Length: 393
Image 1 (cartoon, helix red, strand yellow):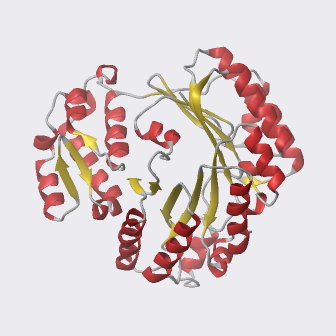
Image 2 (image 1 turned 180 degrees about the vertical axis):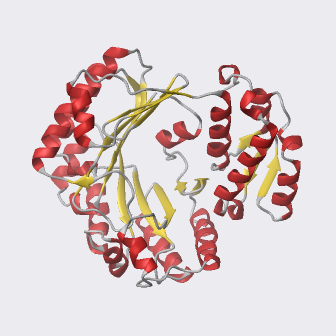
Image 3 (image 1 turned 60 degrees about the vertical axis):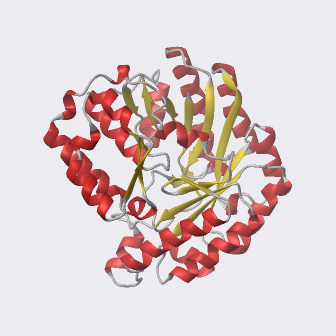
C-alpha cells in the first residue's frame, strides 16, 4: 500500500506552477495539521489497509512543516496504519526551507529516509525567471547540508527547456549535478501551463522558449549523459543509481493501490477512485463533519486498460504484451499493427522478449504515441475488456 500526503503550502507561487498550492501562514499550517491528523484517524477506521510500503509527502512544500508538526503527523500514521519493514519515506523540500542542519536532522529522526529537493536550476537568472525564491548557491548548500545531516538517499528535481537556454547549457548543468552524486535525478521538461504568469510572459514575447528541435536534443542528450554516468533511465523523467529507484512512483506505474490524504489528494482503492476537494476550507469542513469518503469513480475495464498502457509505456521496462492479452483476450501486435509499423519505422519503439518499449526518441513524444493508441482503442471498442480482477500481476 502506498500513502501520499499532500501539503498544499508554499512560501510563494512559482511563475510556472499549476499544482494546487497556496501561500503559507502559521495559522493555516496549524489548522491543516489538526485536520490532517483527524483525516488519518477517520480513513484508518473506515477500512482495513495493507501495510504501508511507501509514504510520500508532496506539495506544495512539505518542508514548511515544523519538526513538531511533522512528528505529530508521523505519529498519527504510525498509530493508525501498519508499516512495512522497509518503509520508503520521502519528503519534498525546497532549498529555501532546508537552511538549517538541525531541521534536516529532526525530519530524519522523524523517519524521513528519502529527501527530494526542488533544485530546478543552477542558473540564478533562470531561477528568478521561474519565480523560485532560492539561489543556485542555496540549492547547493541545501544538498550538502542534507548529506551532513545523514541523508543517504537524495533526489534532485531539475527542469530542462527553460527560456533562453541551449543544449550546451543543459548538459553543463547536468554535469555539475552529477558531480554532487545524488542517488536520484528527476528531469522535467518545462510546460507552459494555462493561466500562469509564465504563459503571460510567453504570449507577450517577454521570454522565448527553445525550439522543438533544441528541446528534443536536450532530452535525448541529457538522458545519454546521465546513463553514461551510471544512472538508470527507468521512467521518462526519472534517473536513479541501482537500488535507488523511487518505490513510491514505481507503485503508481505498476497499478498499486494508494491512499491520498490532504486537500486535492487522490486515492485509488479496490477499483475505485476518490478525489479530495482541492479547496482547503472545503476539505477541512469535510474532515470536521466526519470526513465521509468523496463520491467514488468506479474504474471500469476500459479505464484501467488505458491507465495500464499509459503508465507502463512511460517506463523503461515497457508494456508486457502478455498483460494486454490477459486484460482483453486480444493480440496487441494485431490490434495496433499500423501504429507499430509507423513507430518502428521511425525508431520510436523496440520490441524484445515479449515487451514493447519506447526508445528515448519515443519517450520524447510519448504523449502523442499514447493518444494514438487510445484512439485505436476507441475504434476497437475495448471498453468491453475483461475484468482487471483477472489480471495476472
